[in-house]
Amino acid sequence: MKNVFVIFVVVLVATVAAKKGWKLRQRQQCKYDKSAWSDCDTTTNTVSRVLTLKSGEEGCQQTQNQTITCDRFERLQAWKIKKAENRRELQEKKHQRKERQQEMKENKQLVKEQLKRCRYDHSDWSECDQATNTVTRNFTLSEGEQGCEQSHTITITCDKLNRIQAWKEKKRDQCKYDKGDWSECDNTTNTVTRVMTLRDGEECEPIINVIISCSKFGRIQQWKARKMERKNEKKENKMFIREQKNIWKENKKIVKEQRRLGCNFDVTFSECDPTTNMVTKSYIPTTDDDESCENRSFEYSCDLHERLMEKKRKRQEKRVTRKIDRKEFRQQRLLI
Image (cartoon, rainbow, N blue to C red):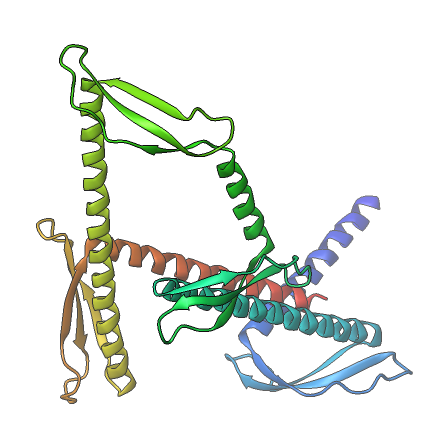
């Protein structure tokens, strides 16, 4: 008898779970327009609304009556209000953060441009504003050409000011010297020397004579030459990548304008040419009746192509993950 009861319970649970899963699948396949909820019926302690089919596959009911308890309806309404408030707060914080970042960027650019031709006296940093976590400093023009702004204010975060002050404090404790030129190699002692004169610092030796071997001096000079060469090469590569990005952006802008006018394109990429280290991107129009839709091809570096493809891959993965999360969230919400 006990075994029969256990089997009955298992079958009942499986039936309920299967029915619930079928209902969930039906909800995902069938899309409905939802009417407003009715007032709470105190007799049955329920609220109801009518669902009218908007789109869906075969087997979807044209209309459905959805009924839930008044308690659950109140929980849903409270959850929706809380969700809307959280979303609004998040958007406000995001907007404020963007405004602060833009303001800091503009102030920084303004200071950079004006420091080239204008000289300013500045005040001390203000106290940290706990509400915005920022400090400000006022600059007043002392000398400069015509067109210099008479005064301006820059704003940075309190954390950044603390880092700057810690760095200055650490730098202040160090001894600073003016370094003289290296002497010629002394063939007798096989050494070179130079004199370092104290410029700033406390409890530091006023003059230091630095002596190293000629071979070490030669290695240092070679290292400096290689370092300068790498620096110049890095600078050239940076300029090259910037030019390639501009080419890529200009062509993308032109294609975007053509698509806005009704052109459709098949996009193809060539293999990376090992000789030139370049990739060719081609836009081939799929509509032949429009003369404004023309073939467009341009070249850019393989390194830039790899970075762009990696960015695109990450963007697609993020989109898929967000879609899955939204689907799971909708399923959880239906179970509330």
